Image (cartoon, rainbow, N blue to C red):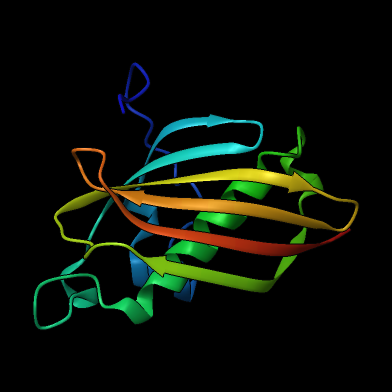
Length: 143
């Protein structure tokens, strides 16, 4: 994956001050690609989320999946102010290989858009493009 020309310094999801965003330090993520129904983000792996083997502790993976899923769902709204809230109603995570730092990439892709729910596939990959995590999330969209 290659980054868009020029730095993108805006927080891609949450500004500092949100518990989940601060935990994964989302204000430091870099957007690599963003279009309707698709988001790719370069992410660093904070030391406080590592297990004793210096891998992402599996319990925190859901936080990353939830955030990339919601971020992807937001792209369906041309006017982002129309995106008020969503609720995660289902999430399935497949751990394919350990997530190691210092960086990894996440990709979220809308695979089905219903009237009130959105199905998002998420992929974590390492710097060589190897898949580390695959997840499917169902979000209920609240108007």
